[in-house]
Amino acid sequence: MKNLGLIAKLDIKESIRSRWFFVYLLVFGALMALFFVTGITDSVVMGFTGLSRLLLVYMQVTIVILPIFILITTVKSISADRESAILEYMLSFPISLRDYYWGKMIGRFTITFFPVLLALVLGVVWGAFKGAEIPWNVLLIYSAFVFALCAVFLGIAFFISTIVKSHDVALGSSFVVWIVLLAFIDIALIGLMLQNRWSDEFIISIALLNPLEVFRVGAIALFDPELTVMGPVAYYLLDTFGKKMFLVYAILYPLFLGALFAYLGYYFFKKKDLL
Amino acid sequence: MIEVKDAVKRFLDTNVLDHVNLTIEKGDKIALMGPNGAGKTTLVRAILGFYHLDSGEIRVKGYHPTKERVKVLKNISFIPQTPPPIKLSISELLEFVSKSSDVKQESIKEEAARMDLDVEKNLQKPFFKLSGGMKQKMLIAIALAKKSDILIFDEPTANLDPKAREKFYALLSELDSDVSTIFITHRLEEVEKLVNREIYMDLGKIVEDRRVGV
Image 1 (tube, rainbow over the protein chains, first blue to last red):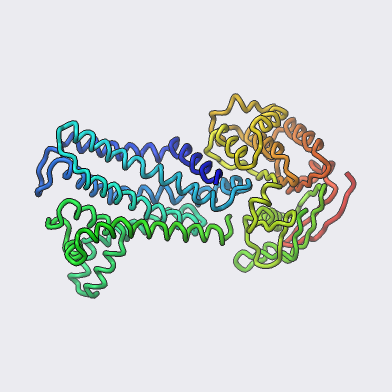
Image 2: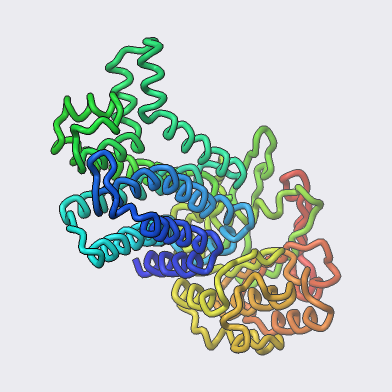
């Protein structure tokens, strides 16, 4: 167990020094700064005001940026080490594969979740400073959503990273995953509905399986399930399952999916050749 | 100490290890030679537990390399042919080695000093930013400080200048006679004074295994 902490700690230290982390931190920090400069917390658009408005905009940005950032930065954690022979050297020391794999995972999770949370906290502090009312419930559940979103994409990234030997293929695969999941939020689903090629139930099932759509619907439902910004599939989901149940699902399902992919990645890491 | 029984490793349709049998006794100093693609590195990687064999078995001091990797690797020090571009700083690398392998950092620094490498001066530098020679010296210092029963070197002097090579071989000659060493090499003349066994591999097989005088 001591090696698990050691690997996590070293991965965090290494990531903090890396260029990608700097860019990652800058993007989320800059976004928050942009929100303040453009006065999002002061504006009223479609009924959203103050911090709720800020969180809504933040959610829309998160849904696009966070998954791809996590995928491209994490997918190389094992595949690139394998390609550059770092893995060969580091694993020539008496470290169990369990400690190495899960230690890397903990380190990478900390480093990807921290800036997103930091930006969120920054937004709240700024909002409070401006005298806005802080929606604590919304904020806590929203943080849980972001946590679950980080977990699912981290799990997928580690899975790809272990099963794919080449760094380029791993990177390409992560782009495909991102594009597919992004495409299958409401826009693509509406298209399929309109063309009427598949049954409605099947389309709803796709929506329920897509962690991005689940995050999106869950996050919007936090603010107001009656609003029309969410799209027909999202509206149908909330109408069918109810707000409370869907919020629980929106936290637990991505966590489960992330854990499943992470475990599958670990299984292949253990069972397949390391190099 | 190391027992390889009828080991077969296939990549695509090629037997990279083709029914290899090998016993390495305590104190054996081996030069493992052969052309590129002969299976030398694959054999070493299988001993280190990086590959799962298609058939056959490997035991290191009675332990299975993939199922009991921690026990196996406690007994082995490995130096790769090319130092990998590790992004950890030297101090972090020392921390990793000392905590994972119960090696005192001072021991590594002492071994490095014997090869004219001042670790203290470079503690905050990322490993990959050191010169090729410094990196190799660092890896050698780590391997020697680990005080393993088995040392595996894959062309360890490739990045060293002649003076550093001499120092390295002088350090090796001080090793305990019970320590087993495997040198993967293309230059027998460099290690022939250190070895008591020469093994030649070709097309995944051991084609020659002979004892020589030290």
